[in-house]
Amino acid sequence: MTAFRHFYGFDPGEADTRLRKIVSRPDPSRPAVHQVHNAIAMPAVAGLHDKDGRRIEAAAIRTVSPEAPYLRKQKLYKGAPETVSLPDRLRVVEEPVLFGGHLMKHYGHFIIESMSRMWARDLFPDLPILFTSPRKWRDPPAYGTDVLGALGLQQRMIVVDQPTLFREVVCPWTAIEYRWKAYAVADEPHIAVARALHRSGRRIWRRPVYLTRSGLTDTLRKSEAESELEEELSTRNFEIIRPEELTLAEQISIFEQAPLVAATVGSALHTALFSRSPTTLATLNWGRGFEHYLLVDGVKRHNSYYLKSMVRRCDGGGYDIDVPLSLSLLEQAGLTEAPVRVPSR
Image (cartoon, rainbow, N blue to C red; front, side, top):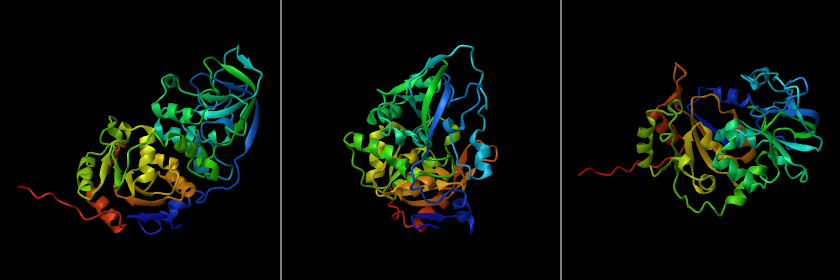
């Protein structure tokens, strides 16, 4: 078990089992770059397809290496059709393009998956960059605009509004494979964004921060106990922050300045990829589903604590936080101060 990952609340051997499900250390080599011919991009359809409508695996929304476990390959395309229906007539682009991936309007997936091919943007500086996107990307989220602007990609972007055949597509492999493996270059575009935006995140963070979900409207992603946890952490010198109320630059500044960032497992912690130096993280979780966080740890060498203090609801309707257990595990890990109670009058 690597020294920069720490597990509390797990059964004996359970953490080792989780680590065996990933390639623990990043691959220092550069991901492959594929040449794809006669690839078709469809409006509001993820990835590229061949002339028979079959999914081109190198240009799929997610990828895994051939040596990845069968379970990863099985879940890779879950819910995605293997083929799409193509029209009789296609617009044709003869000039080569660089494939940039699929723009996702979900913060965590955007940070991990939509940015996973952006490491190759400067290898082919003269090529326009083809992205696929959902229809709702016509009104891009602020973080998407910030990332693409910081990397100077908006002027190079192609997003199709009609079925289009591209004669030649340069297709870089993803730098983070689906819950399995990361390449060392994975954080390069995130670091570039952080450098470009650093003057915008003017706030200074000196106290530990807890990133709460209590302000979200999606009830499946919330726990009724979170307000209790917020109150307890506030007495332990934590600053309680709703990340969705901050700009991307402000969120990045938290991970670069705060002595500790704690949160339940979720998208907000993916901002750790932007940090330009290792930080200390505490991830409350239910013991599963945090492979991407482990991969980010490997790339960034964060000092990460995984605290198993949550339980998935039996009906699949979200999760619950065990507040006393969360506080106990934070104390065991040496991550909290003694609570400071304001005496009642």
